[in-house]
Image (cartoon, rainbow, N blue to C red):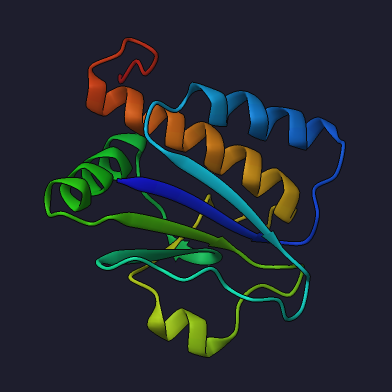
Length: 140
C-alpha cells in the first residue's frame, strides 16, 4: 500500500523538511509527498480503493500501536493508497472533513502544519516498523 502525504504549502529548505526527508527515507513502504498551494491546486488522482486521513486538531487521538494496526488492516484489505491530508494554516473545510475516512489528531494542542508533516512522517515510519516487527518502537 502506498502512503501519500498531501500537504498545503511549501516546506522549502528547513529543519522540518530535513526531518520529513529523514523519516520518509526510512519507511520501507512506497511513500509519496505532494505539496499543493495554500489555496487551490489540483489534487492528484486517487487509485481505488483509497483511504483519506485528514490531520485535524480535533481528530481522533490514537496510540502508535492502534495507528499501525489500522494501516495494516487497510493494507490487508487491499487498499492501494492511504492519503494523509495536511491543511494550510486554516485547516480543512467541513466538506473535506465529512468525506474523510478518519480525522486524526496529534493531541489537543494546535501544531504548526510544517511540524505536523515531520510528526506524521515519523509516525508512518514507526507504524511500518511495528508491522514489520522492527525493534524501533518499544511499547510500555
